[in-house]
Image 1: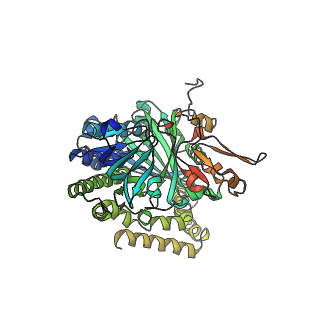
Image 2 (image 1 turned 90 degrees about the vertical axis):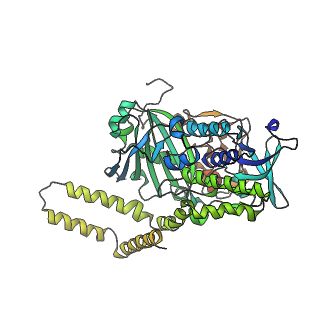
Image 3 (image 1 turned 45 degrees about the vertical axis):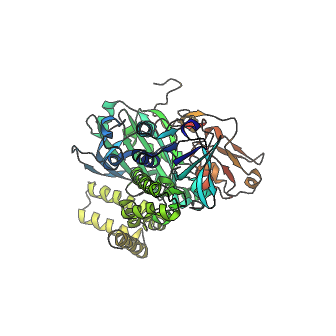
Length: 438
Length: 104
């Protein structure tokens, strides 16, 4: 790394973390003609990263306008399925749109992040892999550099893009300890299946992809969701469950997934697949209320490190890219003024507030509290009731239909007290109020 | 299919070790996960034992000792956050070490 820097080991900007946030930040700076060093702890960018996953087309184009021509993409997603799973049954809602302009593409991070990092390198970013930043160097209450395993490096600005655990943001007090309710553990398994089998099982043509969002099943009454994504010739299946769920339960993360895979609706989708890779990662779920302080003197925090995940819509990489880009633009302004004070870098937080990133997180600011307090309703009771409705509706058992309907309506009140039903209704009103008006 | 190295989708048969065998690692000789073992002795929940997606932690009741199979670590950080004693000195493995996801 030293050969790229001047004799004092100093550069203009150091970005810690080669994920979507860090790379977007670094490439923005390089394009503006600045010297930027991107430090990645993995063997290559993407080696330590995991997500469901799909990346979003429009936000990615904002960083790499022509990425669709050369990036390693798996499939363009045309179908979204929402599967509400009971213990043994399930109800699926499907939305399909095969238009030319896809919203998202499935990718694997080991290829896609690596591609982004290589593109950034072509544009002048100095990429340093296999290097762990142990801590930030602070002088006179300003961040002035990073300490790696081997050497200290200095910069006018350090951008912290070190992911969900962000030990660096914590080190300098921009955030406190993460609570178990504010983060989910996700496990994923990728199964090799032939292209033809994937196309048949998910009703796709070549290049087209399908995303399943899975509710209930092995996660009934738990704050957790499952997912299935189709890649070119493999299928990713996984789930994320909030960490505090494990405090009162002996089931392990991968045991939830094992059980989910055996669900009668899911099992045929991945049957006979060969397990290619198992992986795990944390998902930030704290939302707006848990966003850390985004900047200090000489430092900005971006991406997962800043808790920028919209978990209802499964958006994260796009928030990461936008935050990285804005931090990069702010660094450009700060460099032009030669002012790296907290005040100067606060432009990043101000600009971020004007975008969908903070606006969306604000819109859903009450979502997780309500989800935690009413999880038995919305992650258990109603999921089962939706299925029992369809069980009733499709039944042919010589019982008059009116009797069936009334039995179902009675069961709603019998299985759950009026008080609880009103609490659920109140939660929905609160949520809608928060989303649409507040 | 069916050889020792491939795991076909018979989920009843698949163990955590089978899953972990699909992952590429560059193990270090020193652990990057260092719990305060004295505090582990008085920990009630032993939540690291059930929360870790790689089964890194195993409480040995007979020896009153926590076994840390750090070479299996997926570097997710769940144990660090969930540890009721907040006693795990949790670091990233050295730059050249640890897990290498190819399909994350």
